[in-house]
Image 1 (tube, rainbow, N blue to C red):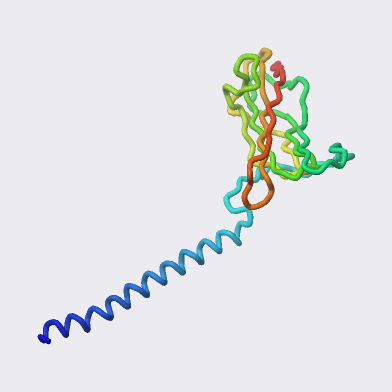
Image 2 (image 1 turned 60 degrees about the vertical axis):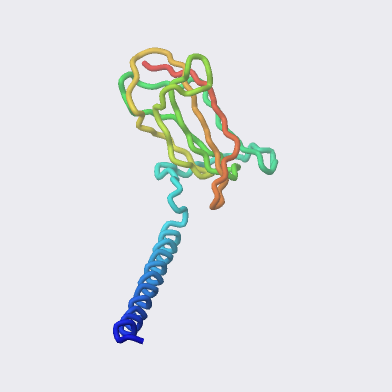
Length: 174
């Protein structure tokens, strides 16, 4: 074997070993980072709404039925003209076994579809509500067709979508 070939063979072994060690170290660092992110934030990047506050309810109105999701209802909603602050009680009843995300907006005509989103919450746990919101804009005086949309997901780590509900409301702005 020529001198050159033997030298090349011996010097490539340490280089291969270094490359394997570097790749293994990088993989271990990535795994450690992922584990830390999971344990440091048990909900992962799941967007629970930080504005949701505990509520006090008198009873569970599901009638004891398992798997029933209760949705709140609203009559007319009153807002002040040209003010972006609102006080709409966006409630996830304590009897629910799911997270609820609320979207509030102006309706597409007389439908239950939203054409302009005015507010969207993060997910609200059962037994919590958001009582005050900052809308994307204030509205001029008048009466508007509006919709409160509720999207639900399971509370496990999969956050599987469940059924939802769109509630048509009349928005009165004075």
